[in-house]
Length: 129
Image (cartoon, rainbow, N blue to C red; front, side, top):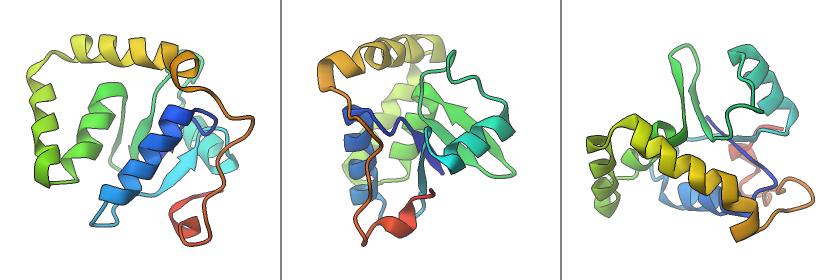
């Protein structure tokens, strides 16, 4: 399960890419602003005012945020995406510094929607409300 900022253009584009490369059909999605997203965030006791990040949630196992979540998602793609795994050689603090810089500027650089994206009927099953 990937929780993402549903009004962020960068985040929505990233979700579209994940869907495209998710050949194993491993991921479901929920906008952080959605009812399901809020329920999961509350269950995990995550303060989204302090953690501006995607959240990779594996029920009954764990959850990851920021660069760790992104690297784990990309690891699932295979192919040339395996090159992104070089990111693991960098300390998490360095990776998250870069992640946080992009996250902080994402609305200025990529824009923001007025409301969360609405998946097409073909993709509806991949999204929780």
